[in-house]
Image (cartoon, rainbow, N blue to C red; front, side, top):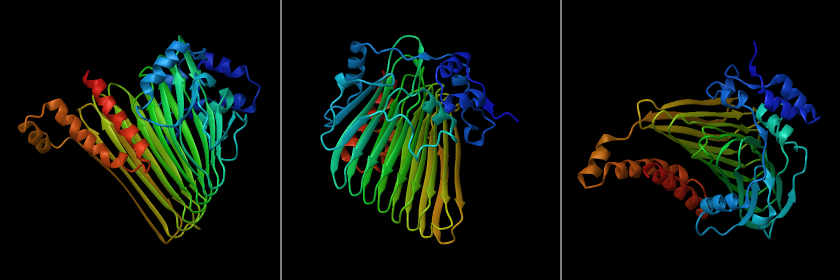
Length: 409
């Protein structure tokens, strides 16, 4: 049974320009189709059936306009800017307390291109990326990593990033993804969180509705370390954010939270695999979905508990708010447990706005649109509040508000 879909002729020709084993394997095997369980709810026909060219150089005026539009007001952070998959020094300001180096070539030991076809696609086509290393016991503050896609034609962009937060160090990263035009954005992160280190990762995906966004994050967390992440999905016609997080030291903690706001005929997928490979570890995942018109949301979350991971505490919840009869959510939370002394739970809820709450607000003079907006933002509030960094939490709040304002205009 064929569980892989062939690449488009143009993308196959693009891959043929390289000589790597990854390119050859990807050209031979293609990309996963709906017969692959992990891709059952997210078909890639929009990618596999299209021709993508080499990304052009972005026009300075377009980059400046998009950067000004996306940059959060009042945010104080170093800034690393990529345009169409390439680092642009002109718009960047390097952090003072972290070591930054350019694209290292091969993946490290965390990402798995041999297993994950979308990572293999990145490995075959990536031109650039950044490595951020925070030295031991250093608080590097906040860094904004901005990925902008803009230009004529239909093109693909593949950035490869690596973040290493060493023992006792701290870093907050705002991961902004924006663009305009017809393109495929395929970023991959490798993240290593050392002992007692804390890494906060807030991702805002606000790509063009004509674009596809396929992103992966691989995170390994050591003893007493924390990987605290939140993904806000606002854009792209086809979007998938996939996280593979491993807890490899006692008392390590992983948060993989998120919110997906999906309207029109857009499709948004948040998939995660959280592996408990050491005793006394904690994982938390809360994902909220707001679906309008014919929007389609997907949540697939798996907690895997190894037999050595006694005293595991894992929690997972997916909630969806359907605001139209044609909106759709597919939810598949999973537990795979091989230890016998654990506390794990998962769940999913689907519902509509509470009509009594809407009536209460309307009876006090609140217009219908404002009443709906207030209730939706209240629904999302407890998820957004899970991010520990207050400044990044404010960015996420404004992202949600801006999305609703654009819909109302």
